[in-house]
Length: 305
Length: 301
Ligand SMILES: Nc1nc2c(ncn2[C@@H]2O[C@H](COP(=O)(O)OP(=O)(O)OP(=O)(O)O)[C@@H](O)[C@H]2O)c(=O)[nH]1
Ligand SMILES: Nc1nc2c(ncn2[C@@H]2O[C@H](COP(=O)(O)OP(=O)(O)OP(=O)(O)O)[C@@H](O)[C@H]2O)c(=O)[nH]1
Ligand SMILES: [Mg+2]
Ligand SMILES: [Mg+2]
Image (cartoon, rainbow over all chains, first blue to last red; front, side, top):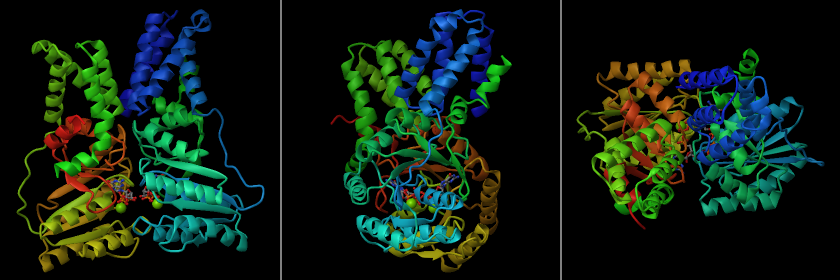
């Protein structure tokens, strides 16, 4: 399917490049194919609509129609517009003036929070930080044990109180970190649905109590159209600071990235690219744009044209 | 039962199908506007572009052929088409003992939790169930299944973390035969369908089962997260190749995700949904009934 789409798009672009002059008609045809590719990549329907409209506006502009190579211009517009939407430059993590920096992870069930908590701890450890993992998922069977095993494997301490109150656990972890000279707290929370009022309220309480410097919304990279609903609900309740996209080591095109960014305006900061704890990458909008568009590298396509 | 599924699927219904109902009642006649709105609702339900286009094309043709005039006529055609597409073959009677169920899927879809739900379902029918902890890879996966086994009061066969999953399966089947249990449910590690090594590990597990109990596994369940989009079609395609999947367990339908991708999976690969997950408890489970599902989905509030 991936290859099929890629080749479909490539032929669209090839055709576009071939046009000496662009008419509104052939722009419209091409945009139709781009729309389809985006939908197949699981970009949200409404986001696609806006995206295509904005590309169209730019594409029928004077600049393109008068340029010597209008096809190239469109390819570039689509790519650039997507990079712009995805966040332009690479976003980094905030740190506290006075340690410890508190990072809180939230998201739906099974999105990859616990694994990412450990990945982030390892990542920060390499940057000479001293992380503390905190087990505030008191619901999922063996969630605490999971975090403890992961922590042990990378020599990062794990603060836990067993099946207690997540708000208190999170709060107590701060003094524990201070006492043990640990400069970064990474809080693992239970997965929950955005429509679960009680569970969402718990996150709001934790946020109020510990005032995290960074709340990261951890989302499954394979998420479909529903990404906008979940992300906007989490954003509304928590005003999170950034997004982590997991399970990007597969063949998911990751349209959720564009949807989440477009809907919440929050930058995507990291990607999970495997089950091992070193499988973490910073997010690069330009690479992601190419992936969603289903092309190895749009830029080289443009250059070849 | 109908009440519960209606309750669980309330969100889905409110979001997609009450929208569909609204669309039908908001339009006076069958026109391109109406078709476009139907298209939007299907695509935002993760039905996928191809399947959606096919459904729309079908609507267009049938409307013409049946000389449909009102949007209600079109609604009826759509409902018939969707029921037809979702229809599962009649249930086979369980004659094997032990009946071996292998549960597979990508990471975090809900395999282990769904196994607890299935085990609970079988236990309620008075059957005894043995669980096999063949996810020896993910941190605390064995503990997680073990906690479920305790809650359920069923037996579990487990090895150390990092052990060969095929060895766990071998021991589980040996124990199942010796103890004459009714069901063996095998939990496997989540794996992305693109990982060649992990997929061949799964094929190996499958062969070990078949060798020890010819004809087994009697059922291979692919667990799909209703929140997943079009990638789930790729997942299904690769898992079918590796282990001959029979049915789908569609999880997390208690959220707002619609799981429309199962329509594409059914259409392209013929694998029906058989079970649905509606929460994190072992009782948050329903057998999938397309008729009931659609009745619920189209019901007016
Ligand atoms: N392939 C792959 N698997 C991942 C990645 N991140 C997490 N996983 C796997 O996804 C599954 C779920 O990960 P968890 O970290 O337990 O997810 P969670 O969000 O903590 O889950 P809950 O606590 O139940 O809500 C596990 O099998 C992980 O190994 C990733 O980037 N790639
Ligand atoms: N809301 C909701 N959550 C579910 C459902 N099924 C499972 N979950 C949750 O999803 C998360 C992942 O479930 P698991 O059963 O651990 O998933 P898994 O496929 O075994 O995960 P791995 O073994 O890591 O690949 C847990 O937090 C479960 O409680 C469901 O139907 N609805
Ligand atoms: Mg977790
Ligand atoms: Mg599991």
